[in-house]
Structure formats: structure tokens, C-alpha cells
Image (cartoon, one colour):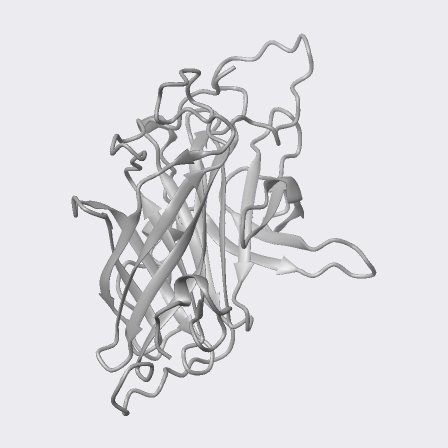
Length: 326
């Protein structure tokens, strides 16, 4: 049976105070814009001890659980390429929250997206990224390829504001009368690949989120529909990360566009980390999501993150690093 469609105005996340859309001064810590962070305050992976599984320690203004800093448990069934999944749902009538987290190969940057799939006409979600220790850009004094201009590749993970088949939800007891908005929904997950180029002489960055696919969308039973999932996922259009400035502390914010039509569909931001700018972590928010035919998915919203490694430095050889310099 199809799960209710993603969102609607009633499912647009509620903004929580904090953060800024203004680029931070060069002598301040990383500041994530409200449009990306939204309800998510902090999220840190806590390594398990004595053989115990890792947990995700989350502070989100969102009715997930108590205390404010709550532990979410590993949920391997919700993993997507490059990201480990965590979840929290206290009982069948509470919201199901999913977190997707990853770190760069050298552990210099990390990113987390977290959110629920909707209940009582609201969705709560957000994305964060941060950097460990300092950051030094690649040298940009020499001429030729592979000096101050470098490339990055990595994986993308996103959450829609509902729309999942709901396999991770706790079952509501039989016979319990439940109104439509009373039953919690599960956020559908989005996977993809990200490729970015950065120039550290001009201090600019741009790129693309491609091979985008919703892996568990269930909003139609019509096999002829472009958003029908036959088991292999629902393909989405690519998203271009338009050129933006890298400021002195290694952060950047910019506009996300459709690939060919060049209309704005959201915003993105991120941070460069590591020695010689080894890695990038960032976040993306989309107000409009288009299926592979170019049709917008009604009322769907998306938040996601990307974690990238530099080609020729920390990234694995091959794939999207083919043809890049060095």
C-alpha cells in the first residue's frame, strides 16, 4: 500500500533560532546558515566501548526523546553508500528520527543529516558539517594543473520530508484507533555522488550532485509513474552547486540549481578541512525536487549532506577522479 505523499506546506520544517545566513568573519568558528541547519543543533558519533556499537549523540529541537542530548542507535538496514544510519523512536506513536553520518578519509571533516518523516502536520530536520582542527589551503603559487586548483569526489546522503515505505517504523498495536496525522511517517532516503572543483588562488568552489536516487519512496502504486519504485529506487534530476566564494576560514555558501534549466532550487554550504585542503564537508537544502522526467514531486523537500576527499591526495583513485590533476 502506498505511503502518504511527501509533505505539503503543513510538513515544511519549523525553523529554530540559531545560526546565521551571513558569512562569518575570518576569525570566527564555522557558522552554518539557518536554511541548512534548521532544527538540528549538534550531532556527534560516540564510539562504542567494550564491543558496544557506536551511537549518534544528537540535540535536535524536535520531540525525538529525552534528554536534550539523546543517543540514537545504529540501524544498518538504513545505511546508504558512504553513510552510516542511526535512528530513534521511543514508541510506535512517537516520531521516527533517522540520522545519516560520514567523515572524510582523513577524519578532518564530517557531516550529519537528521530528521523525521512527519507527524501532526510538522517535520523536523537539519544538517550540520564541521572540521577537526585547522585548515591549510593547497599552495596556489605555482603554475599548471594540480596546484591551487583541485578536485573532490564523494557521496551524498539526503532525507525527504516523508514518503518512505516505512520499514523502520515500530508497529502500532492492532486495534489502536489512529488518525491519519497521528501515525508517524518515515523520511525517504536519497543517495548520490558529488564532484566539486575548487580554486584556491581565486578562492572559489563549484560542483554537482549527480546520480541522485530515492531508495525507498512509496507515494504511488502506478507502475507507469516516474516516481513509482519498482525496487531499484526512483531517479531524480541532478543538482548543480553554482560557483561560490571560499572565505578565509575555509567556509562557503551558494545557490543550488537545476542542471540544464538553471533555475534555483535551494542552497548549499560547506567547509574545507585538512592539510592542503584534503577534504570538504557540506550540506544542501532543496525546496523543489524533480524526478528524472523533470516533473516536480509535489510538496517534497530535501535536506542532505556531502563528504568529499581530494583527488590525488586522500580520495581513492579512479571513478570521478579520472582525468583530474594531479
